[in-house]
Amino acid sequence: MSKKKVLVTGIVPKEGLTKLMAECDVTYSEGEPFTRDYVLEHLGEYDAWLLMGQKGDREMLDAGKKLEIISLNAVGFDHVDTEYAKSKGITVSNSPQAVRVPTAEMTFSLLLAATKRLSFYDKVVRNGEWIDPSERRYQGLTLEGATLGIYGMGRIGSTVAGFAKAFGMKVLYHDVYRLPEEKEAELGVEYVTFDELVETADVVTIHAPLLPSTKHKFNKEVFQKMKNRSYLVNAARGPIVSEEDLIEAIKTGQIAGAGLDVFEFEPNVAEELRALDNVIMAPHAGTGTIEGRRTLAEEAADNILSYFAGQPVNVVNK
Ligand SMILES: NC(=O)c1ccc[n+]([C@@H]2O[C@H](COP(=O)([O-])OP(=O)(O)OC[C@H]3O[C@@H](n4cnc5c(N)ncnc54)[C@H](O)[C@@H]3O)[C@@H](O)[C@H]2O)c1
Image (cartoon, helix red, strand yellow):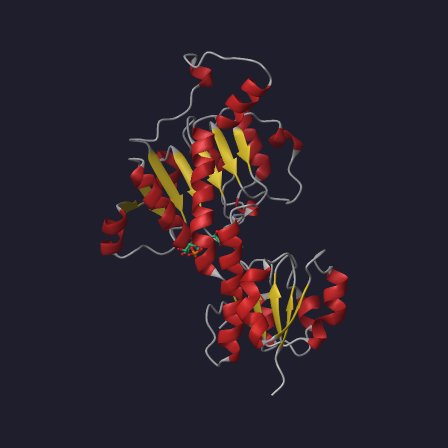
């Protein structure tokens, strides 16, 4: 039987594709990633697409004439028209395990950097300047005894909760689903309404998916409810936060600062946001570790192998 043909787009570490390459006929670019035009022209020849760095929109899906499975090198799937894929009989799988720890670590790094004012302090020292940290306007937040509010208590949210407990934080969460009581006790977390979460937390971290119901969930009204000394950390998806309202909230002292791995109009980041000293930013690098990228590629490749073995896993458009 001829081998299944797999197209890999984006920059994916080759060592994560070893098994896939042994069992399938894999097209993979070691140099520049394939362009959208290249993918549109060639996708029709492939049975599977390991998708990174491209959108799985209608035009792309129409081009994938023989496509049976799209495996995403990511957990978020807001860049793929999953329903349209389903209507065409294309299975879409995501890769939830590999992203969990690196993204939770990035979230906590941003939380630490924002609350400890690291971006500002670093700039001061680099500029050959000095400040007196006994002045209140230069001070950050002690985490021990502070309250973390987690929005979206899934895989990444629960991992962040564990880190926060190690720092002695009290952890509240809000989600569309409440965890079973035993799980809440095991994690040491308390379920609250969305309003209670934003009104009480000293730091809010976002871990919900981007959906019509979560777009601009964090807006002017919400920032008005947050404490003046509180911080927002977003390592989920940019459009969950209204960037314009966030800038206003920080500039007017409605909240104390933010840690952002994701932005509303990536890769463009508003100049006003970039000018703020109390914002620490990363270029959507939540999974940007060597181990993270390798295991992510392995998980995405395994999705394809499981599918062709008749046992699809991590399917997001059943
Ligand atoms: N920055 C990065 O590089 C990076 C990496 C991985 C994941 N992410 C983002 O992080 C998100 C979370 O990942 P995960 O693996 O923890 O996903 P998950 O599915 O395990 O958890 C998401 C949680 O959000 C909850 N949720 C859904 N809708 C909600 C709503 N309207 N209000 C409150 N909660 C809601 C779900 O019930 C679930 O508990 C992903 O959707 C993705 O967008 C970002």
